[in-house]
Length: 422
Image (cartoon, rainbow, N blue to C red; front, side):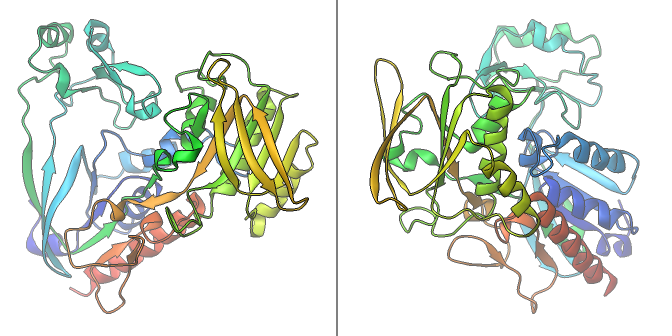
């Protein structure tokens, strides 16, 4: 255990997406002991599930790999996955934090050989692919997972197959009797970077998400386009696996709407421009329609928007989609919308619809167990008079990766200053 002085200068980072990883690395590289607490079994957050970044359309694995390497080589960074904060007591410079750690049923001896998965016969929904396919109940979260270690789903425990899975591991890495545990650490400052969740599109009943097979959300579409996804990167119609001849992208699906999310999530337009390029790469002759209220591509992203807009196969229609209907026989979709520029009602038939759902801060779902201010939408407000606990990234406002990284660096600096005052 660190001595009292070292504990007061330690920093807790909650959440290991790009914001959390950035904050942790920045703090550790100036000499602070850092504890990363992540509720999932792997680091990387939402970025790990993305296919490409905009506007360069490069893989996020590059940025993640650099961060993982910096973590691996820094002994000051301590990682707890499958863990959640239960309680935070104390004050700036002296917080006592209780952490609940869920059992993984696989210990550090795991070499990711996959023999446990080969022996497993039980299947569960693949959470990494948003439930679009199945995975064995003894599984690696994803191919680029860090830590690179398998996990056993609780549904497999206490079954006969669990014993077979245990026997299949020659490294004795399976521990079926692992239990939930609670630990405590003492730190001087806390950075909360738990990120965001997509708005539940099924609440927008007139769009058919969850009911119509060929209606996807933007984050589901990322997994269709990814080579690590369930279709190996092939964009297909979910209803029958057929090719896609026409796609409609529906902007502000639930956003800027007093009945759902009243705010703009800032990145949805850019994500859709990226998705249009995914389709164009695989289907050069596909017809692509983007229905929008306003296209928001500010600053350096305007060039990206202009590039996409020049494509003669991509149509931009200014108008909010009122309703989507499905042909029960063919699964073809019809979008009803008023074109604001021509004042005409359009009934557009397409093979596939992608809904641009907004970003919901996870602090709107799971509050920080400490005295923190929030706005009416659940985003946290950093009070300059209450130092010691700092928000970072998308729990403060909707943001892209670059902005989140900048904000996380700022949070790390504030946390370092908090501990330096002690």
